[in-house]
Length: 284
Image (cartoon, rainbow, N blue to C red):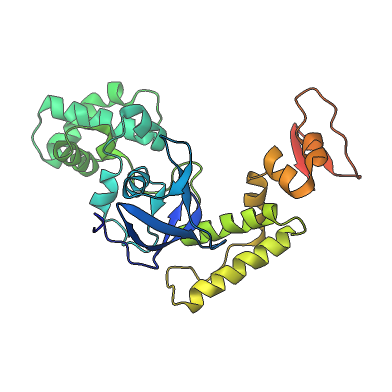
């Protein structure tokens, strides 16, 4: 039974920051993936039984649609294709992604309602006439006539939705600046740190570099020349710090001390372990 998408055997995908390798189709819509770091099979929770099972075709489809599973080697989308990524967003979500999209939409929608002639001269007169009420208090001023014409064309083509005017530049808040493969490697290194009792952050960095060199030796061309820095690994390690990860690495007593409820006294074991400056805690 063939699966309804093309994933070559051996292809490495990224799922929630973890690298997984496609091992093959086991039949009956069951697929086998392995964790690149551990080598073990990837298992997910069956929503009906609550048991851990191998991945199914439907799981892959839903995770891909949600953006949690993707192929880092897939070709980049064209500008039009990238714009379609925002098509399902409502106005508040578009404004959160790009605050200026509301300003663009306000001007473009006003032109569509006015039905003015499609020339720079007509647009220039419209801008001068409506600047007072359309500029409002956003300090963005007025657009150029040619710019406004471009926005109107995009609104006409995209069904007059704010999503058609969301900027493609930049990145979503909280999104990693690393390429997907490097992001997965850094995440694996952070997991390595918390899973290995004696590992230091420097050891985690070395682990990441070693895994990166293996990919390059296998012919991977998607990785940038420069590897992520020690500081990048350190910050990712700290982002995963929790009671559970601390308990795994350092023991329950340490985790309880570090994650006491608010109001309880938190002890320091050495000088300079916890430093507060201007309301911000710095740990060394």
